[in-house]
Image 1: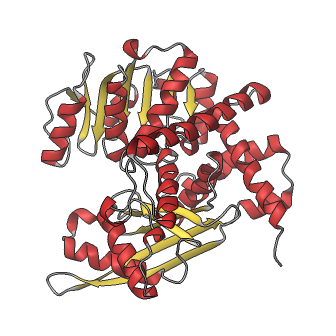
Image 2: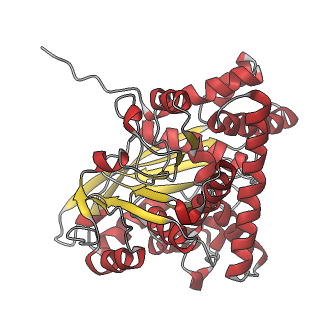
Image 3: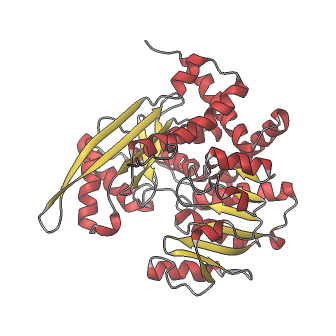
Length: 419
């Protein structure tokens, strides 16, 4: 009889990275204990009625990991594979992501075990409103501010905001970010994560002597993050040679026309049948010849098994947790530079912060101003990491955790532990 053994959890990977940085910071056992336990984990049932009249029940999650630096902040994902372990890990990473770019937020994440592709808009709205209603007492502009994540959209954020506002009997646009512009969203928010990925990539490429016009980029995942990253890389002169989504990967050594790929996805909802490149497997895409590789899909795509086959010089983590600790060690040994997720994909939460600020003051910036502020935040903090790498002779990932942990620890020590 064989027993299925699940590989190390996503949260376990996060703790491994945390411990490496905590050792260099000489963090005491008590502070480690506080920082490796979430403040609050919420699990609840979401019964809803199908358009057919039948009832189903999904599970809703919200993990509020830390409030040390401010209100918790993090997205909501709709996916049948959502688990408490995954949501806890993502909330853990959000804590460090907000801290590494010096935002006044803690970390949170949420999810519902549903597949939006099987749901009508009415069903999706009913699930969202029930999910929001269950969280009314623990979210808010000064408590916890959700945002879009995997399979969630500005429309879903609009329903969440409206449900919360109805319950508290006043309009509260600042309860969520990633909303439509018409009800308090920020210009530049949709492209922000992909833009942030491109900003840090281009800066690191310059440091490595990689000129855009001579560089090739492969992007795994052609959703919101990957799509806009591809567009911006192409605009800056890079050749995008590979893209992928759930239907498979497409590679063209001569370069993929990103605009055509975007138009194709807009029309067909995925890349299935795209003729702008040769179809290969997602595994082959990760091992394709390129200068820059951007994983922009889900967790754990780089493992101890495939890390030795990666040919990129620079990996920029557009997704959360795409690299296991085993893979990270192999990349370091091979001299492959990795800009870690908590830095590389922090553009989304940074512009979410801008949206939260704009909602609270009732004044909205032009897109050029949002983009300029985003670049300042991303580059100022990336350069801080690069200094730590030189001083501590460590990787960018360890430097990112060191900077983030140090900022959270300072806040905790100033506030003290209420007991």
